Amino acid sequence: MTRVSRRRVNTLIETRIYEVFWEHLAQLNTSNLIREFLQSLLSHSEQIMLSKRLAIALMLAKGYTYASIDDTLKVSKATITTIHRQLNTGAPGYTRAITLLKKSEQKQAAWDKVEELLLKFSPAAHMSSARFARKSALGKELFKRKMQRQVL
Image 1 (cartoon, rainbow, N blue to C red):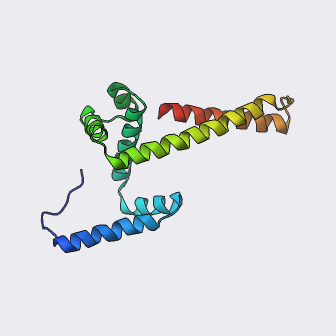
Image 2 (cartoon, helix red, strand yellow):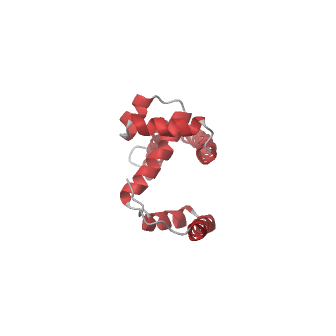
Image 3 (cartoon, rainbow, N blue to C red):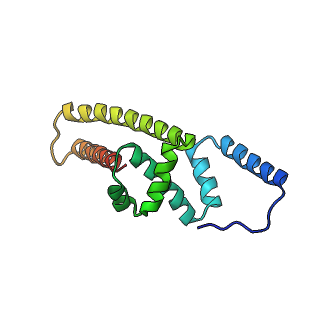
């Protein structure tokens, strides 16, 4: 767990520090910029912790059991309970993130279905041809994406 100094910062300074932090985050407009900033700012353990919290919230929203979340993410039941309690009290940050993630997954699933149909109805290729290799690689990538979505 991270530690905060016992020496208190002036409330006005603390408020300004938060404002600067939130403003900077809001200016990062691509996932690469956000990743770069957070990887510089957070330790590896902190990145894992925050990522797991969001994954817990998403899995709870999808109806996963505590046991399956624990088994998949290797987190304590207490952590799952804390996130569950926050979701039940209407934590707007989690709620908005879950909504956006679900929409993103639905869009990706729709595109995957289109890609699957295109692969299915594309002409057959000879096993040793480059077209067969491309079709096979696309099919494998599609399968991986589907499996990743099923996990979370």
